[in-house]
Image 1: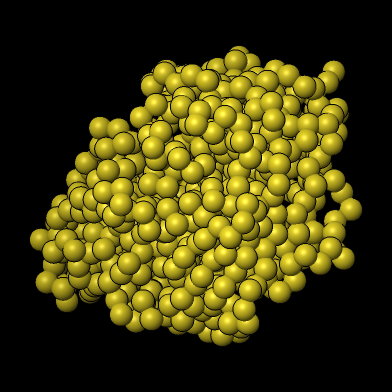
Image 2: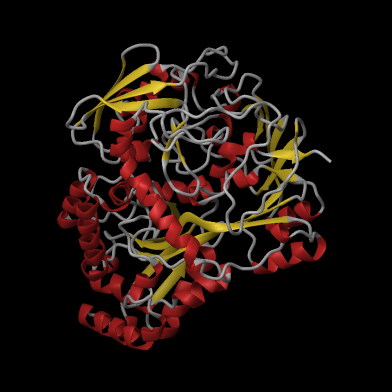
Length: 598
């Protein structure tokens, strides 16, 4: 077994974390820098498929038959060898996609397989790079008018009514306006249904001015617009898709590497190579299959037996099982962008009291809770992902009351005093139910949270209300029909966009109904601020108030991203990295993976 293939748990890779934080700083500031530097190709990268560092110019796609290359990173093996054209990428999962409208879906959809984003993020640095939008520029000095140019020669898959025509500026303008929720009234859909509208906060209009050019108007400087557009769930849909409808996903067509051919709910999804995909030589696989299996144990068994291509999110005992029987399997790990949390509905009588919410944050034993499911490898997080240049890093988080393992006893004593002051001595009178999403770590987190608080305060009454399925959870979360939930959030590519989405009174994912005028004002200031020092100062104030005055939720961790691939699968290293995103989102780049020729 080569050195690249062994599995060892991640042990606080501070060197990479520091590099990651510094690199994302470049990405966060690029929203403005790219506007004024667009089109200047002096810094073009040397390798095929790499991105010019100015962020405004397009990238060349790899030539046919040429293995793409990615940066060497700790925890990311690279399988050497020439790619084979053909074969199948097979995914084992417990359910098929349940929502098919990309702009209103809560999570994954077929669009993550069949389409692309306007802009992408460098997987490791977070730097914005061109994709379906080839380049962009600032149209006025105030930063309130932007011009985006659509890459020429990007065919939509050959289904009516599009019939293989090229994606154009009208398609892009349609996506921008619909992502922002501007079409809600005409469609008879609540604007709150548009889950990613906060990613384009401040946009007032998007208009196609010719076949390739879209002019965007903002009501504020566009400090975070391009980072927001690159959010992984802003997959592009062609104009006319609303008329086609979203009931039958096999009628949908995107610009991605694979097109859908079969959808059998609860059984399987079949996709085939898009023959006119714009990235030269890709995809390598002929087919992509998403196969429903009974449970996680069945998925693990299928991977060990070689029936599926990868196994995602292994916990330590699963990794050990794989290593024992498949020592040549390729193990990947990096810190991802998902943060687990316990979110109270702040409109609930008991949970509306800051003192109750703060007491819970102080009381949780984060090491016991997070190690219980993930083992070593999770990342400390309190208010915002430590990859943001403006956020508190892991060292800082571990000094905070509640998170500091060395002060847990006194923090719990303080938590008890807060409950007493709120009129709930020993937890008496505190009653609520936790609804966990029924996958990954979320139910485990809810149970550990319940157990820890019940042992500490025997009079507290916490029940677990398990939803019937993921769709039921998604509906109740979106409707704010819960007392407390246990779930995760995928980090947006800008810290103030993230906070707007989660904590602003108009935030598209403010499921806990948190409202605070100071929070809104700080977020709004941050969104229009370009200066790095000023952004840092605003973020520092927000984080301090979050912990000392608001505590709208209890943030638990940053998940570790883990995959195990069959030993003959290459190209996965080119899409690995925190900003390559996770799980279903990673499949957005499946066209870049391949079987290695033997």
